[in-house]
Length: 256
Ligand SMILES: NC(=O)c1ccc[n+]([C@@H]2O[C@H](COP(=O)([O-])OP(=O)(O)OC[C@H]3O[C@@H](n4cnc5c(N)ncnc54)[C@H](O)[C@@H]3O)[C@@H](O)[C@H]2O)c1
Ligand SMILES: [Zn+2]
Image (cartoon, rainbow, N blue to C red; front, side, top):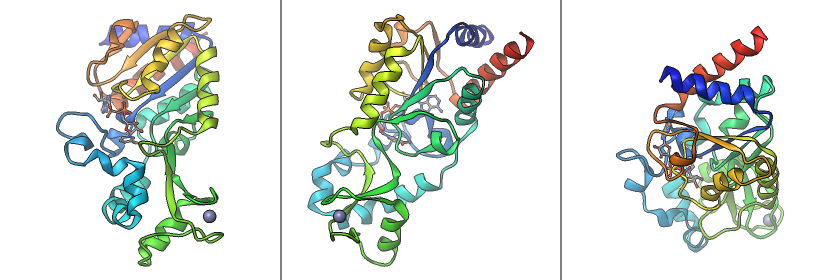
């Protein structure tokens, strides 16, 4: 392990344009379950159709009855040592930005800058009719006051949490930002993703074949299909390992 951490840190020190690609495994140590971890992943307990836009549209009240508790759990979660390590890396000039599949906003709450949230976020609510954006509290307050189909105060349309459901388009701004980050990077750090959900699953290939032939490194508890393409593969906890790597980088940069 020591050797892998050393090599990981060396690659960061050698690289000029570094980005991170994060998935649900980035947030499990903040108490938010991922989808596919054996034993704890949400898909073992929850029907995936709950995350389908047609399920929401057919009966928003039923959705909020079933999902409010999980949503509040995500809103209450706090960034862990791994999120903070990424912010530290950015302050050291060694992280351009992050592409994330997570909707929990924990990278933003850890004050990392330049984030492409591919699946939206749960900080906000959006009106299904006029697309007006509200802070999530507008939605939550209505639900708590018994209005289980929360409404837009402008047009009366139904308010949806501003995360991307199955069957919805990905936000264009995030797609553009992700494209820019991937085109320019020379190192992609993959953190906590099974790399099975499109288009994120394809992004490491795009980095490998960009103008810089970017290098890949990964920290993920389980194996992924991309492990063979990664120069360092660590099957361990992000909150444990990533701060150690950033410590080494910081030490080296200070000794320069
Ligand atoms: N926090 C969130 O916002 C959240 C939570 C659940 C699901 N999702 C959504 O679920 C989809 C799932 O795809 P995915 O690839 O992101 O997740 P996934 O559930 O498919 O895979 C998560 C991976 O992370 C690894 N992992 C879990 N905890 C880890 C830890 N502490 N350290 C290192 N590795 C760890 C697991 O081994 C697994 O391979 C995404 O579309 C995402 O939008 C988001
Ligand atoms: Zn509206």
